[in-house]
Length: 109
Image (cartoon, rainbow, N blue to C red; front, side, top):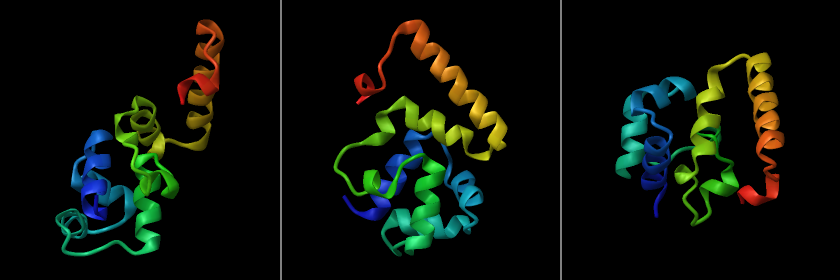
């Protein structure tokens, strides 16, 4: 899979439009469309910002696995524009639910 296909797949998996992703990563929407169409490739800086906005690491981006199917990645991406305090509260809430449902972190992998 090429960069553009992977970006499109992850973006759609995160429930974001190309315009919304462009705003989150401070790029022109046309740039996102060109990347997804395979007309241009992202710089490393742009790819890092795109990955962060989509809730994946660069390592995950370059694996064959499809992290967009993981609901946790979508939820993580949703937290991207929240203040740090709010993200911390979300993390605390997840920890409480892990306790309530006795879910081990490793069982999610």
